[in-house]
Image (cartoon, rainbow, N blue to C red; front, side, top):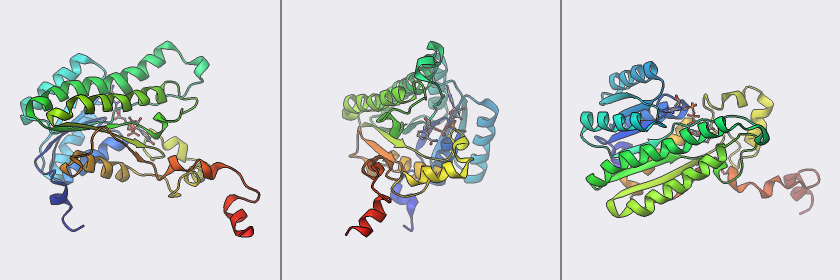
Length: 276
Ligand SMILES: NC(=O)c1ccc[n+]([C@@H]2O[C@H](COP(=O)([O-])OP(=O)(O)OC[C@H]3O[C@@H](n4cnc5c(N)ncnc54)[C@H](O)[C@@H]3O)[C@@H](O)[C@H]2O)c1
């Protein structure tokens, strides 16, 4: 595609990205900026958010705003909405990215850890969506994209409340879509899996584990942050205007590989070759 910018039409839009200085967030912010969108970077890590906002502004010439905010705290979120509206005068796009993943045996999961995952992964998405959504309703337009996970459909074992919170995110997104579609506000989820970021990099230090992870996907590769950002740009743009309340897997076809997991003598492909 020669003129990607005009195809997506994101130039001059205002995008709010939470988890803005995390693995996916940094790429999402950069890709919006490349499209000419102005970006509010929302994250709990203050200094890094400020310096990255400045870097993006200097590199791409778009307007950026660093917002230090704990997305799970109501007063922080309300202050973030005020800061963004005061600065930009509107909000076109919200991308909920801020999330945590903590390992735990379910029988040992403390109430405190359970609550923390719910607070950040689900309540944080609720607060950001509701408060920025009120602005979008008044405007009569807006697009929200919530980062869920393929493992909202299947339990991520030994990861505490993670899958439970993300299953909640899927329904939160649909609830918003069902109620706010009439106001021109769309809400969609993406469901990534097997993406190499700081949150998941420990899983890729061992090359054998990395290979086994590749093997369970249809594409036979690990995802990268560009894969995620590309899906988000599409769902943020008017090109997806008739797509609302959906869950888009971005996981190299991992979710369709159940049949491939069933063993056959010598291996499934070899079995087919020998027995045709
Ligand atoms: N990496 C993967 O393979 C993968 C797969 C599926 C889904 N996801 C989801 O994608 C999202 C981003 O993942 P990532 O790999 O970029 O993670 P990451 O840990 O690299 O980034 C998360 C960011 O969120 C910020 N954050 C955490 N708590 C916050 C809070 N209370 N308020 C504001 N900001 C907060 C962190 O400071 C960090 O910058 C998460 O929601 C995660 O569950 C990741």
